[in-house]
Length: 466
Image 1: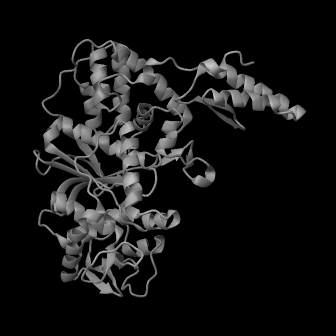
Image 2: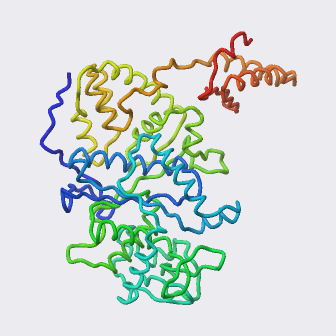
């Protein structure tokens, strides 16, 4: 059996986007490790790209809890529940904004937890912190870092000399490469909105600058300060947030609350983006999926999670049906072994060590394969639980035999080939109708026929199908 004697405390090394190098993680206070991750704007279902930072930082959260203790780590992830996209959705549907946001938050919790993620300790909502945002804006104005213009309040980028440090670009380069809002009241094209006016039909709050609502960037600065103070350990999010969102957060936070020993987050972490079958995810390409759509196709949450963990968070990830099938086969083997565990175990130290090396999840998965090969059921079981790949009980889908629909796929392929010659598609339609009636999703394309059994699949309905 593999040696599983744990070290006193593994040394965690994380890649800091700010310094562009891997650093030893030394929390400001080991008894109070704090991590803040930018969460969703709640107006629609989370797509599979949205799920990547959730799984990445859930794995970081699990690692930190393992090393420092569950009671010594606080994970905050916000909800943006006031935004132009939400206002637009309300106008399109005729629904109330709070009805949309409450529904979407419930969807988000359900979908993300199905992927094996732990709910953060704190989930602040922007609308609950408007007063904190107004206070921070007033501090920025009094310090000469922001100005009022035509009912708006804007951050003066020229007032912060270090602007652009995170993204590694000069203000001149950012102006040339960014889509900046052209407004006559801006002193500098890169100045960004902290507060903007609201029309009578839009949500708004009273402020020293009139009735209005906050800009996007000020939200996380105000909420993280309220929760964690001016300095905390880790700030994370998707790579698409590095500029302008995180760059702007740094500027306004460091100007509002400067410190001799630094300001805001000491480590910045960003995950790379997700593709589908080698192409950028896009509705126009027909490869845009919500997490719920994958789950409804019958792909278990644990399978989705294992596919994500198979790629290092700082590398682009490609979601493919082949990877999902391979992940399901792997989990079935692992679960069959884990079910034999008759003693208590602990997460495999080699898996913990891999994760401590900048969240090397592919390395951790490789170690799981070694555990399974060695037949260590107890250690494998607890390692899978640590990785969020199983609960105390084995999932029901893993106990069910895998459905082989290849025979019916061949029948449909042959029927379609004959129909293309005869122009009589009645046999194809009959086969499709029978499969759909049995709870099978039928996908027919140029590359062939793919049959996916749904949650209500009834093989008895296919008996006698010829």
